[in-house]
Amino acid sequence: MVSNTTKEYAFMNEVVLSVNAFKEVTTEKGLNGLALNIRNLLLTRPNTYPSDPDYGVGIQDYRFETITETVLSEITQKIKEQQNTYIPSENIYEIRAELLPTSNSGIKTLGVLVTLRNGENIAVTFEQNKSNMKVVSQIYV
Image (cartoon, rainbow, N blue to C red; front, side, top):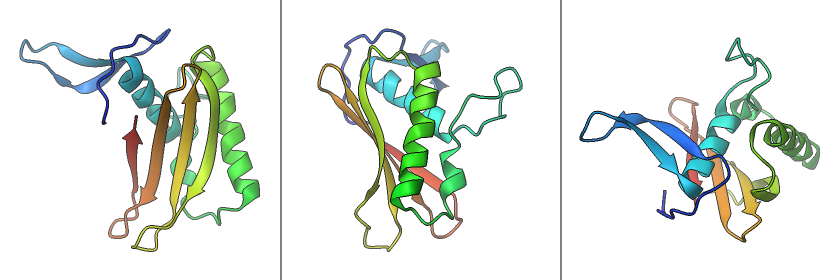
């Protein structure tokens, strides 16, 4: 992640899988916390959590799809439904999925672009690793 902004968002404290020097669980706050929360929402497949089977977009399920405008609209709609349920909308102005320019490797990159009400942006990109076919994500804030 690029930014270390400390602006507070209405709900964002995302627990990360690390501990600090005092052996306390590390959390990300502000824009980074919001970005991690969005990425987790996108990567989690529905039915992963028995207590909340509707949570998650399951973006990696689209890795073998031909990405057309129809598929991008479907992905965007799923993301918006999840965002409306799990991320307070007072923070987000717009959220959409786009097919980004192809990298040199020939692999298509799917980008989820989020514009916040205060004008800040978050981009979460997904690429498929050629060697093991896993989905690799990157956050840009």
